[in-house]
Image (cartoon, rainbow, N blue to C red):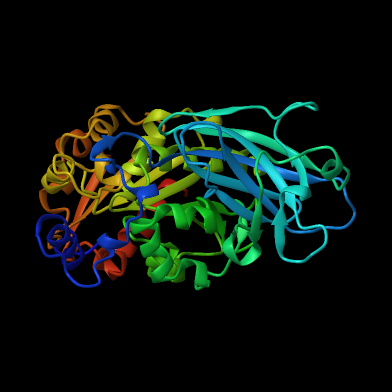
Length: 419
């Protein structure tokens, strides 16, 4: 995020009259960490946990399916957590703390409306749904829902249901999906939604690793991780100049407004799924801005089979956090989950920076000498002293991703480490 964007953010947070059109005003209660009810503060009513799984259909006819998280706690019976899937699709649901049953409702008559009489399956035992309990930053995975037309005669939904397909967002993404870097899903508008409205982003895209070509076992993966309001398109300069004969570019696309520890956990899970599928022996991870915090948490918190992450490079990461983010947690106003993690007193930052990177990883730190966003935060001693080397460039927070000398040095590191 450049300096101008930060100015707008902080003006929106701390002035009585908000700037017209500021995205701050678009933050919904499901993404607001400080929600109010009857004048009293309610904690953890915002979306902060993820359920991952797959819908499997035994029917020959493949109809679109609505996946619904039915809340078992709270006094709000409205259903806001649902996505449309193919009949056999992976899914990712972004939910608040609580207890849930998961139902699949299939549009068997293809009228575009999902009703309580079209329940095709649920997560659980043959005789009853199985409860899923979520706490803050949980990731519950491996959920499988078996669906069939016959189930609609045996299973009933707990309440009347009438959802038009146009009311729901289709989620048709999966890790390892081959996509052009200029695909519309990576647009500036969608990337911005990932920061300001992460729940909407998660319904549409989840948090996935994308390929730009089919997996090639002869090439070394280079995983690019964006920062705040970012997308794979931020890496176009690197992508165009990377030696595609030796390396295969991958991109982690996630909503930057979620808790960074949850983003890190999702990245780990997606990466391990790909490793289980392809068995690659070595790779490089390169991250920009707060993507550096996400990836350092990944590399210090989780264990990797075969230690396949060999090279790690960060660019313009604000390691020490922002004082203004601390203030945002003390004032009663709207606040996104990721803002809780980028303050100078953040438990996430303290835990992430105090942990040591594995000795099998060669780490390089890049920073911009004209970077007004990260400024001195990019050279925190807890990180700097453990780097194999560090390099400063005459560029700012954004231009570091399109600077000729930056990419040249990055290319030299790849050549040296993977010769």
